[in-house]
Image (cartoon, rainbow, N blue to C red; front, side, top):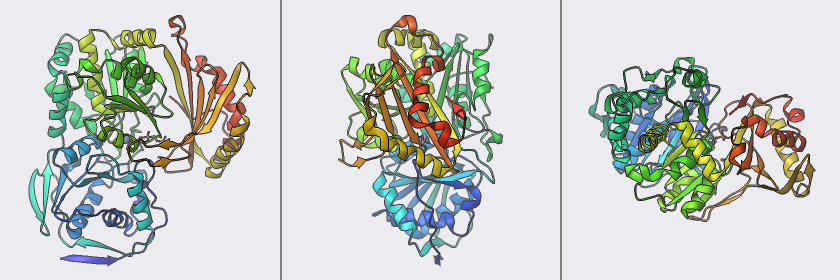
Length: 542
Ligand code: G6P
Ligand code: ZN
């Protein structure tokens, strides 16, 4: 019943910021997914007889790979696999299921916010027993294994019916098809004041969630419409589709523009939110106010005790280096620890496991807490609703008051997508080469105070991650950061992050790009973006 199948290695199976991501036709090559899954199993120890969680965001090729992964898990000796009905588990829900049932680990099939479909993206990510993405020492071992793999193990059995909840036998291993929503929705109910949010909604506060035809639809319908009483239709694009209905499931001002415009319109809803393909990202929009992810982290941290799950206060805050320092001011005021990590949720895992931090956030529309070990889109939405219900104020008032108290960190990210990889690398090495000459340089009225390539020493396991983004700091606390995206699947994406701190409340309502104009100009002067990318302007501004 168990076959050992000979295979040849592929050279390109290096996991990126968040697992292996490639176009579907790449995954459809002979044994491509099998090789990677076997390489995962070969890099782990001690899972014999234990439980594995498997689920995905429902994108094209999800079901096929789940069937393969189930048969391979059985052949490799797992005792049980818990899989979401229909192959569905959002990334935060998968993290929760791993933790709640004490699973050995989990496989999440997703390419997150990248489009889905026969010629679009697919991905495989491994999460460890704490529910979080595998740390680099595991992903490095997986990559090393993919380069030499010569066989994989699989059970020769029929496909499992993924659509029926229940227990099944697969070559001696138990497959438990679980409802993907209930455990997660129950967890949210323990963290947030559902009666207060229900009362807010009942009083006429209009909430819409755009699930972008991706995985959060069933979760949002259950929580917002069923448990919190929002009218039917409050969740839009609620059915997960293999091609996300041709949406680009990335909740930002470009891809969720319809939602943004709706909330900003005169009779639009009071509050809008969107999630990405696998449900870990979020975008928050209030009437008259878009909330940057950096500000969202700061506001959640500052108001955390409103929510029952955080009533005792938070232990500390972590943010990725390119995320604005808005949360740092909150941590300072609360007298709690603040940690600056490289980009990638996996860097927060150790800090949360060691109880050093409770809430974490990234500029890339990711916010979350120690309730799971992934960022969590709906969690952020519920946190905001809880804060609004407790403070009896709308998003705009909350933000304006926050800035008045802490000052405003003007912030924007400019992306240059589809850049030739060699040119992007050349830009970064040219920058690296001039780092030591930059301090003291004057550009317009800006004077460079420091310039470096960010490197991180993990305070828990002492591991060091170098070359995590080039930072140029200016006198007065403004900064620009350059880094190449680790999640793209074609060409390179250059990201420029721009930040300026403004303490004076009279200057808090300037248009963001205008407020950052001089820094954006300085970035061009220093890095010669136009010359290297051949582009006159960014493809996305958030
Ligand atoms: C994924 C990761 C995040 C990370 C983001 C940005 O969503 O889960 O932790 O911040 O990618 O990555 P990139 O390398 O594209 O800037
Ligand atoms: Zn995602």
